[in-house]
Amino acid sequence: MIELYDTTLRDGTQGEGINLTVQDKLRITQLLDEFGVHLIEGGWPGSNPKDVEYFDRVRGLNLSHARIAAFGSTCRPSLQPGDDPNLQMLLAAETPVATIFGKAWIRHVTQVLRTDRDNNLRLVEQSVAFLKGAGRRVIFDAEHFFDGFFADPDYALAVLRAAANGGADTLVLCDTNGGMMPWQVREAVGRVQQELTVPLGIHTHNDSGCAVANSMVALHAGCTHVQGTINGIGERCGNADLCPIIANVELKTERSSLPEGGMVRLTELARHVAEIANYALPAGAPYVGRSAFVHKAGVHVSAIQRDEGSYEHCAPESVGNQTRVVVSELSGRGNLERKAGDFGLGDGNGGDHRELLARIKELENQGFAFEAAEASVELMMRRERPDYRPFFELMDFLVVVEHREGRGHLAEANVKIRVGEHEHHTAAGGVGPVGALDLALRKALRDAYPQIEGFRLVDYKVRILDSSQATKATTRVMIDTSDGAQTWSTVGASRNIIEASWQALYDSFEYGLIRAGLHGPDDAAYTCETSVSPAR
Image 1: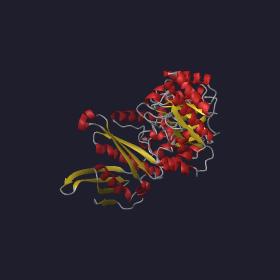
Image 2: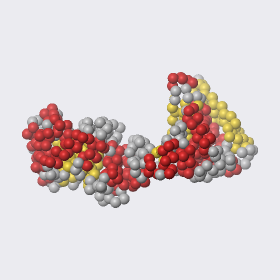
Image 3: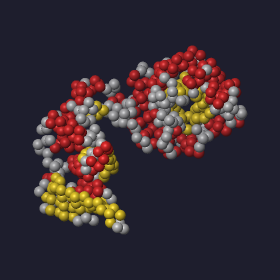
Image 4: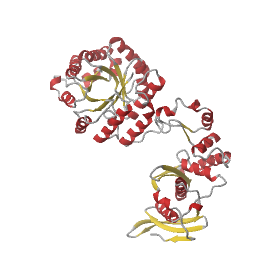
């Protein structure tokens, strides 16, 4: 069994832009406990009031699996452990586990800690012994161990022996600067195993892009304890990402790290932690990212249609993720067949996928991008069916932006649409031209389709595709819309930003009406022949 040690709440919060409240930390603690993590490092109780409060409140949680660890350092060079405020705060945290780091690189001993070799060894051994004497399980993090080992292996090993002599339960070898290569980690771990019998752990950083690889190599070489953070957040380039480490252990080795059935919650955990910490989980994050099992190339999609595992290294469901197919200029007919099935439209069903595929490729050449705009793709499929009737048709629109003395800039849009045999001509003012167009379209559709009152535009993205063309450049507009239960994305592209916005808006409203269970203009609710609404 590999022991999982999570330091998201301490080392993870050292990442730029990562800030957690005490309540955030308590919520993540509960998630990690429910998932099956063995040890949760809650923070450094001597460093700030927030961590002191966390350790006070975490005692009130009814944890079923995890134990909480408090983090700190060896005592100051001029003090005895019993007189050191940092160690006293560790005990005051009343956690069953205390983790302390000590210097294992002579460069840090002399240049950073400003002491000598022998005194550093005393600090390590006596600090560990002090915490053990207080009844704590003690984990010793040998800071900069690998740098220290390759600079002076005898001294780095002496630091580990000092911790072992003090009674450390686990010795953790740290690549604190994150610069080690896997073969260096293997060499050092092998040497330590020859010298000591205390259980070994690994703590790596990702500055060379090798944190997960280095952790896996260390585990393969005999370490039984691994430290990291959820999604790899942490200082500089981050810590080792526990998500792929856990999945690799469970799926790629004969060892285990989780209770039975825990793996299927991995993606949920990764995304929930990202949501709480308010950062975007990279789409390409191994195992748990939205794109981890996405297929775009037509050859790949054609293959997985016949054999799901032909382009997937593991079953997405094993980690709580799913296979996805996206449509783009690289797609083949298999992409569209798969998407038709995903959309509940069957395979073909009245449309020629070859013609649609050719159209998609041409539209992408013009600036459209359909990978993230699946609602627009579904609408294109529906529109190619012979029985499809659009909910509304554009007759014309006019958008005006003007500057009025004393009132600043104003925007107004006029929209004329047809719903079946009925026409609506409305106008609305807005903060900007796209906002005015959105409001005017809503007014034009409100009587016919009152369901649109529940649609809300939640994001509007603009990308200039060929900026060298200056004001003639093609603009791509992506709009995210929500009905409160689900969010969908639509796309438009044109050299005219208003036209591109209209294309995305049109698809957004039409797709929303389909989601509302309507089937076309026959479902319109109004009875009047023509409606004209003045601008507000």
